[in-house]
Length: 196
Image 1 (cartoon, rainbow, N blue to C red):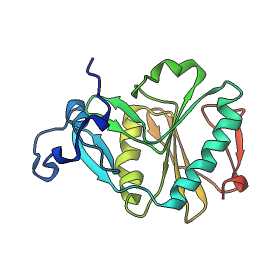
Image 2: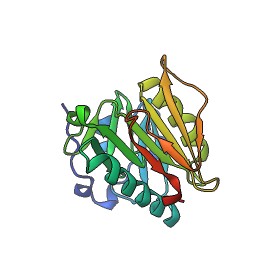
Image 3: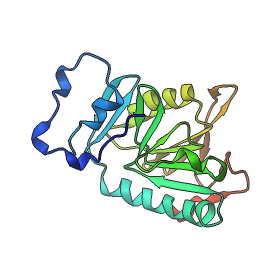
Image 4: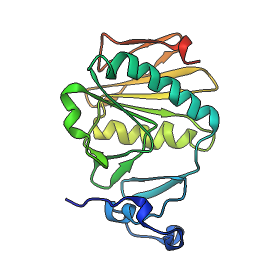
């Protein structure tokens, strides 16, 4: 199994010719990307780059992490891993969701440098530059990979769109503004007034 070295091993002067690459990206290619404070992801062999998120995005992520720590991690129901952390969903697809949630029975998916396989819940917080990317490209990929639960957090609308996988498809999302009950952990519910 290929192991990605720390991306800090690469000097900034070794930038890859991202715009001229025509072949499919691999995990080995990903491991050669120098650190540049951007989010790099590979979906179906295609390389996507996003700028660093804005401050409100990060503050919202921190508040959600607090909820997951209080109601999932500390009670021993699972683990929460914030970005940047690599999720190697399937061959040719490596993503960095804003938050990754793995229930206790699936802890073995989390490795030292990446998660390999399908986590129980992935959370994406919308940014102005990534709205279409998160809503369409990543949602479809998460659905095809079999991610049981997926949230799109919309800071502008103060709403979480909760997608639950049923018969291999995400149906119409549940729009959550006041509270949200986790599908993968049915006894866990967040009061979103503590987040917004």
